Length: 155
Image (tube, rainbow, N blue to C red; front, side, top):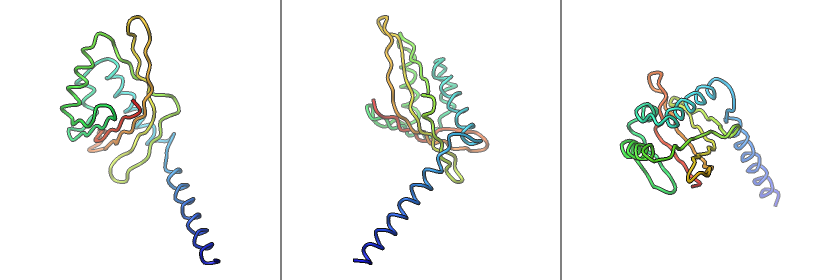
């Protein structure tokens, strides 16, 4: 009985330490957070202004975009989807929810960005707003940040 109790105590301590270490890795301020926040802002300025070429510069050509309601898209499919969206009669606007963004470093690669954002547009004279969750994997290569993987969900 003592051996089992010691085992579970050690397991509990290891689990708690793991969650503490992993939670401590999340950044909500600092240099890396600021870099990714800047990239996020520039990326969605391009989206909100319907500048397809500028927007696609924030995605690597190896992009894999996973979306719960539309499936998986590569770079070219994503470009086509954004192009179609930008031709809609309404203007879709994206806004990051303040305080929702977290950044996690990826050693020798880049960073993970997680957060929530609101997409809104006016349709038939009425404001439509929807909140979704997202995760972007940013790679910094030759000093340039680009998204290589994205997951968007909660649609």
